Image (cartoon, rainbow, N blue to C red; front, side, top):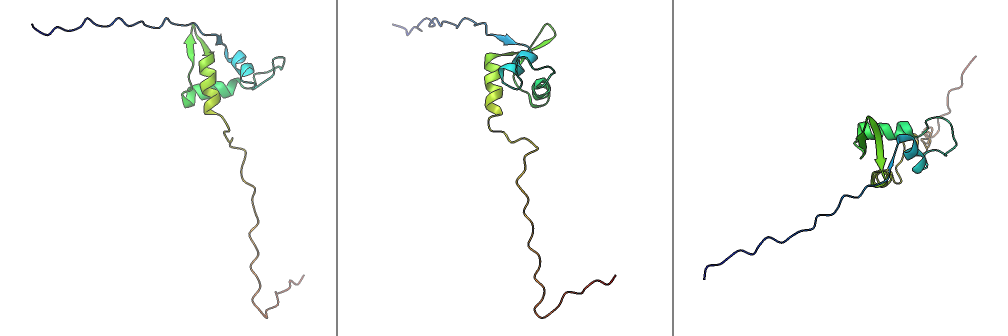
Length: 110
């Protein structure tokens, strides 16, 4: 009796799930980069720069930049506890050189 192959197993492909999408302004509010009633575009530049320069996940549809819930979760995780460029360790002063023993520092004359 010749060996026969089993028929291929039927695999169920997951149905695509439609996520919630947010505009750049809504995403900035959702990530708490600005408050809902606050005027201006605070946080939007941060998101746009991240997409354009660091390759953050996003969707571009109908000429708009949109973020899904999973995109925002990835962005938040990438920036978790991130130190911005403005925070630096506090500078300490270098100790002064001690004057050689027995020498008196020269005084200035006016």
